[in-house]
Length: 144
Image 1 (tube, rainbow, N blue to C red):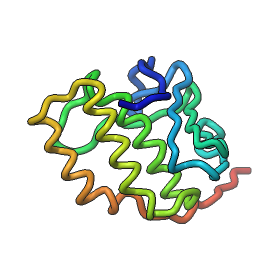
Image 2 (cartoon, rainbow, N blue to C red; image 1 turned 45 degrees about the horizontal axis):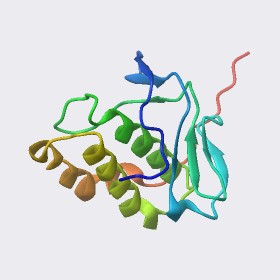
Image 3 (cartoon, rainbow, N blue to C red; image 1 turned 180 degrees about the vertical axis):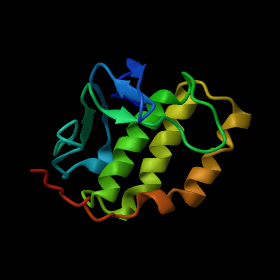
């Protein structure tokens, strides 16, 4: 069980991404202690005590892979996507990816995902590294 976390999230469907958070959500993560940063236009924050907070307005695409989005994976996919964004931005080391994936699994279980559907988590563990690699920032464009 995850001791200190938002139990329920509120979100709405969104074009472009699939969902947008409408109220802030947080989780205390011991392995994030000592990190401090903002990401995703200040919608994602990590405090030195290890609390990850995601502000209303953050957009994400739900769960990836061969599964459907439902109440058992929305909270987990929210935190997983936010943390993967921080990996891609180089704000967290790639060595934390296994812990990020394990947090996702813990949330899936806690939120009631069945045993058979939990098998897709193996795909995240195996192929998640392909989507977590640090990326160059997008080019800044200028218009007249």
